[in-house]
Image (tube, rainbow, N blue to C red):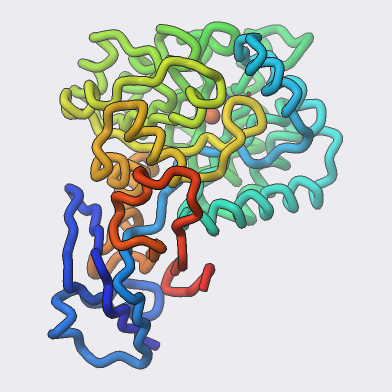
Length: 382
Ligand code: NIG
Ligand code: FE
């Protein structure tokens, strides 16, 4: 079956750069984009979809989420808004609730949150473990996540569980826990931060994970300056995420390596932290991705349009840069070349906005602008 998408107001392609075509049409065949060109020259197709002058762009690639969890931390959020600072300590609350939950309850929560993401235009999502912190609970989280996405990340080294010894837990996370989780994971990640794992502990887990065949990612420089960014670049990680506090040498290291800086502006928004300076990274030549970090502690938002709006309004990104980072940038953070762009031969993951241009994503924050979503050529939001 082929489908001609016609009467597109504006087609945002997001390839190497952000490019916009007007008077364009797209033909989707099966799961992929088969043809893009001037509407007047569009070939015949089995079906025609008139999108009535609306903007079309690639589905969002949300390269960072923690949606396998149970429990509620809204009271912690309220306390934070009343002046208490964010700390990694809240993770233990979610760990306790997650361990108690059934597989079915955890899977239902993932399905629910992924449904919200799809409705807001996300067509590729990464999911981390990290709220189990035992061999069985981490493997269970990843097994459940694997039922929803191929982009699964082992985050056994999220925090040291209460009562455990940090070095013994690091050895567990780099040994038997990694072994149990590796069959369900594409990536491994470590929270390299004061209060979580130091550079040596993080290196131990990440090098073991690389030997087990996993790609690497790092949570770094979220709560303060630290070694996370440098370690990620040193180990050739695909992405270092947060990057809230960056020194000049961190920026130089990122510019000299091929590690993507994934910025999570929903975290700064939800924890009242200073926003990273995305413009500084982009000027230095660093590849920047945007992701939601959807999790019950530091940012309980599943909305990539919100991340785009925050990145533009608070982090010095142009709308074009933010849309690119939420699509093609996310794909680079996951080392994927089949998603995050509208191009011939790529997956037909497309978002139709209830707006004439991509600018509205930042111009109209909080407004549900996603009108329709195609994922692999299938209408998931008709
Ligand atoms: O990415 N930084 C570490 N982990 C999560 C937050 C986890 C939580 O607070 O539950 C994050 O922000
Ligand atoms: Fe995270």
